[in-house]
Length: 200
Image (cartoon, rainbow, N blue to C red; front, side):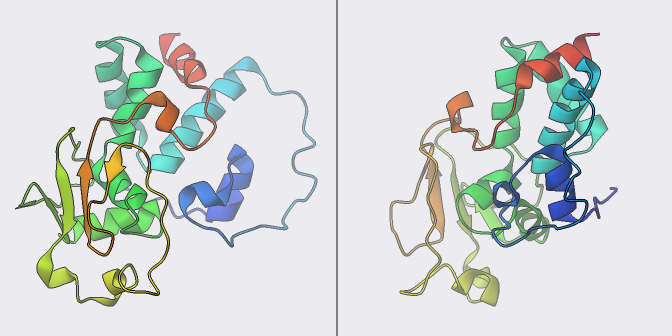
């Protein structure tokens, strides 16, 4: 699979995103400080920007993103279903649960087989979780430096979204209490523009 090697801060600036959405709290860029002083963006440009933003945040490529769109279009409110489906990806759940500092790191950790879903090993980042699922770090992975930083008194504080619950504070296990909703998306996006783009 192709990897996105673009500098995070530069890409975030181009898409009008805060690097914090990606899990990077200290990244900034001083390049092209007057870069926002551009001529008015066309309707197509705005639609394309929204699509690129969502693809970039969740780390999916065009073919996979279009497949998510086609499935969402067959179910109901296309834009909302598209976003909530992407939010259900296992790599995103791992990031949102605080088991990884960024979505990119979460995708790598999932691919390397560090997680169990309902007691079974899953190494597919695009695996879609369901309400009632449990996601936890494997017992043999808990001693690694990657996960030790989330335990103990010096653990990194994580604010969990409303649809994820951690019953035991000092444990690397979370429950999916419900499916994510549109209100749970933590970055600004106008999904109707994506729907308009694909509807042409």
